[in-house]
Image 1 (cartoon, helix red, strand yellow):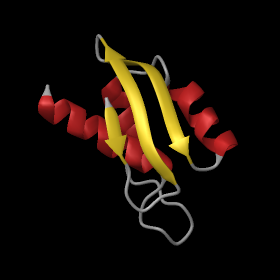
Image 2 (cartoon, rainbow, N blue to C red):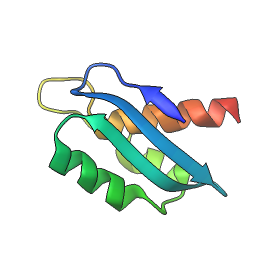
Image 3 (cartoon, one colour):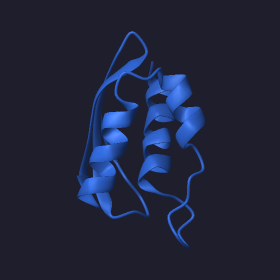
Image 4 (cartoon, rainbow, N blue to C red):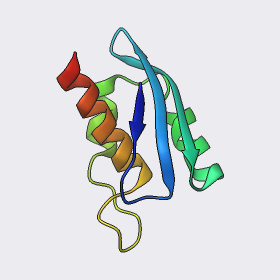
Length: 81
């Protein structure tokens, strides 16, 4: 699934889910080291657990962050399923 982000440096998040687990996560743009780190840490995690851990994280003065945007993308995925 592709998710167009809002309010962060990353423009898009691509991810795949199998058996309610994240099997692939890739951020397009943003802080490469941070987004690669988040992607590697989150892969293999249950979608519900990932949402609980990432939802609401802020980046500096912004009301959102790349991890928070991933949580929003995962929630949107759950609504579609």
